[in-house]
Image (cartoon, rainbow, N blue to C red; front, side, top):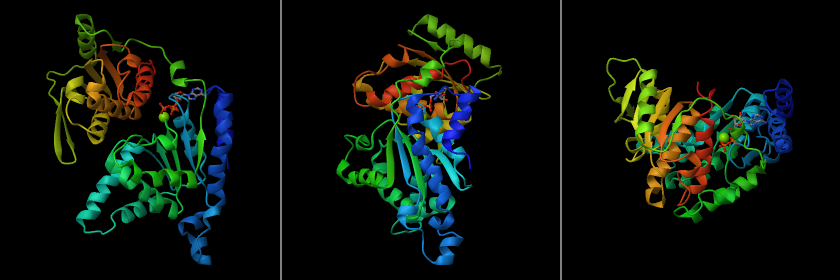
Length: 363
Ligand SMILES: Nc1ncnc2c1ncn2[C@@H]1O[C@H](COP(=O)(O)OP(=O)(O)OP(=O)(O)O)[C@@H](O)[C@H]1O
Ligand SMILES: [Mg+2]
């Protein structure tokens, strides 16, 4: 079995990664996860060993999960990919936390319709039956519906012997900070501390910043010049006789947006973020296009908290799907939202917006 450390050092030798002492500092914790998975075979999930001996592996023998947190661009997602690669089993799954919670909420609705008393259990058990290692990238809890079920969900996953690895920009104690009914959420934090090793990736390097170069795709300030530049790129990228609105169906609702030509779409900031669209809508947009042009991103303040939050969700979805982004905006990314609730989360968005401007960004 190749350990995460070995994979990391091989990438450094090959020149794909630069050795980063802080990243090296967390490699032993990642190695413990994959070694734990190798040491606790299917028994932990009631596999043949467990069935043969009639007892599941004791909790202490099961691989402990890992909660890796730290600032933007430090390499958390990259390290999680290495864990996925090194994990010596087939039943492993990596999923963006937003997308996963969407799936869970849909499963809960279905279970409730079917009359389940405890809807979380069958949904969690189904997830656990399919994966012994679950990697959640970017755990962030902003939604009360998610906050209220995530504790029970994880409890059942742990009970079933699933090893959970998550990345986050926040220390567990800051999850769902200032959220509604937060006291109901606190047992989840205790559960994380009990069942997962909590490790900070405190690198001074933002590797995302280091990758910057490339043709201009961010036009600021707003005005006639920016508009002309956007029109020119739109014309360069599209060659359709007509550009109808992008039509999507999300959970049975129709969503119509801006204009589209093949897999290139264009919409204004207000069309995307000025109405009550959510993660499912933005994931659908990200799936439908390779390039998205966003016109007229304004400077946001506490008064536009909702628009700013939607914008964060939109950029997360575009980033995850590696969509190329071209935008006109009132300012550079880091200056778009500097005060107000969620300004902390916005730092990651700004960092991503910078990375998405790199010439080699995109699929
Ligand atoms: N040691 C390294 N050498 C070179 N590139 C790196 C290194 N570590 C990370 N990167 C690259 O830097 C970028 C940012 O890394 P990554 O996405 O893993 O950060 P992150 O901590 O997950 O950030 P965020 O909190 O915004 O999700 C990625 O393109 C990644 O491949
Ligand atoms: Mg990440």
